[in-house]
Image (cartoon, rainbow, N blue to C red; front, side, top):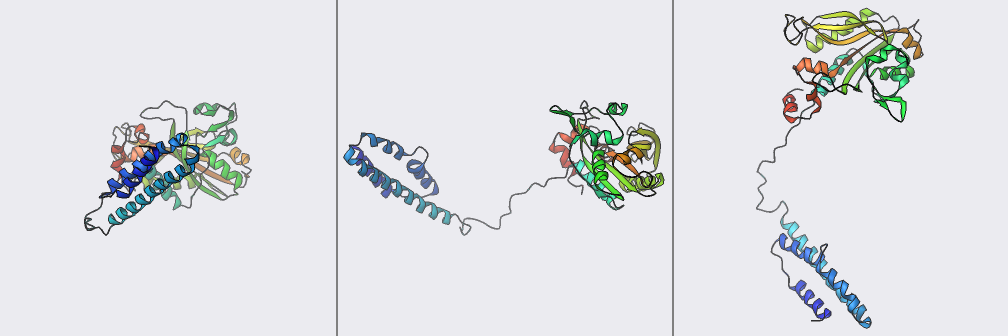
Amino acid sequence: MDIFEHIAALQNEINETTFSSADDAEKFRIRFLGTKNILKDIFGEIKNVPNERKKEFGQVVNAVKQAAEEKHALAKEKFEATNSFTNKDIDLTLPGDVVTIGARHPIQLVKNQIVDIFKRLGFAVQEDREIEDDWHNFTALNMPEDHPARDMQDTFFVNINPDIVLRTHTSSVQVRTMENQKPPIRILSPGRVFRNETISARAHCFFHQVEGLYIDENVSFADLLQTLDFFVKEMFGQDVKIKLRPSYFPFTEPSAEVDVTCFICGGKGCNVCKYTGWVEILGCGMVDPKVLENCNIDPKKYSGFAFGMGIERITMLKYQIKDLRLFSENDVRFLEQFKSVL
């Protein structure tokens, strides 16, 4: 059988082919129109066709290909119409597939709750970059290059520019806000921060903070105390008490650590509070006048307070979670426990 007889046989095969199912149509498509279809070998035979018949060869091969395409298109249209929702074999009353409902991450749940509480006091959420420069992360916050306070936090520096760091706290957001906004300022800056720490049940190389800042005329330490007392009672319950201990932060003066009565044991003593009856939750203080000066705010006219807390720590206390690593391991068994939490 010469090549022209072979082509004629393929044309007859196409004409006589019938389809009883969509599978038959798919097999036909693969044979005549697929990536390795039979016509590709036929086209390759053109080199063996006499020159005076090459034009005729191209025409008949193209006619076979066109016939195959038309045949398959009609079959596809037929079976798609047959398989539409009007098919009597489909029971539209059957229940659909069950959709698995996800859950908000516990860190997000607690962050939202913290933000909602402070919004009721007039605080606006302010967010900014996670990659910072030295000025906004350290120097403007009363920590010059040789200040010993920089030893309090190991930092991830960017190799191509040692002036660029992964922010170690969201205080950098407060600096940028004070530089670009005149008082009164009342902001809350939640976000992710980074520190070069060994990962363990109580520490991680990244975690989340919420920091607050209030700058205005005649802001006092009493305003700070009332603000934090309101937050603690809204977050942990009306029976929880607050206690401030003197501390040190380079960007506040005076500074304090804030403890609350253990909401697990009610202050009687347990393993969560290490049997002291108190649990540390955040740090705070009055904004240092030097920080105000660095941000072009007159410290003789304005004063303010700042506070900051780790969201992971609040979450661990609230839900009695003992291992910090659980928050970032994406274990579905852990996350599913929070489905019922709004």
